Image (cartoon, rainbow, N blue to C red; front, side, top):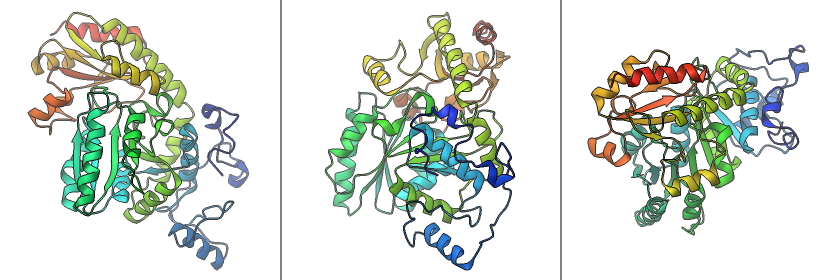
Length: 424
């Protein structure tokens, strides 16, 4: 079933209750059962041949031809239902799910690049992403260029043009432009329309895809495909999963690019398992409610915390303390600020640790997007492998604390943060 055919009149939150699933195929079960199986039986030898022809790219699938079930490393009913529903949120032509967010990112980048290529990416980014780009890809002959884009897109545009020219002269290509927006953990926004324009300005026959990590704002508050992105990646562990009980990732976007990613996923085996897919399908039914509640809590906490004694700055996406160009990007690109933001405390690591250790409701953990509220110290955890120079360039100081706000009572959360501030 096409992920967009029946989504014209119905809202995504409505479609999450049944899109892509026919109860008559599962004994009338109102919810999809878990297809905990490794392999599927063909009705005929001819079916097996047809299914493998499509799965291995030996021929194009017909307009109304379903991808036959073969083996759960390739496809599975639970995964197909989940992928159809994920695609609805951003009107993507295709979605694929993976065993983790990093599996989604690494599989996607490997599918797009080859030795001699260059990948341009924005910093700061999730620590695992930067590790992949800075330490793993160069071993495979793929050069990476990091851009701390803090000037409205000029630095990124210049890096795209330079990298493309240099790669071409060396016999390679600019394989992809990778953007994380808002950035982790500073909430720095990247202008996606400007990035897409910089790619178009290259004038090359096959322009590099713009790949966007949309984990921080999720499918509710930012839709990169509508602003020029070609592919969107997610850590589904975060807001989509939302209960801190699974690990998964996703990639969504253009069908031709997704075919390359699907090939790499099949061969590398980075697909997620049926039970995790089933849990994610369950979580999608309440995604909008959870994200709306957590954002409302975060917006109220930002309002109360801003200017409070002991807090030097509040870093929320497009917020009152951000630069005018950041606020302009937010107005054009985002439907909301989400529920993950950072604060700069008066002091350094010692004061930050006293604050963190004094928290009672906020749990000390490095993830985000769950129903519970979390606090972390990026400089000593997720971004601890950054050099002092990189931390300074990206604004990740020892005074920075990242907060992921959950769905608890907002007055209780504010009381916890307030009492922790007295320990500075």
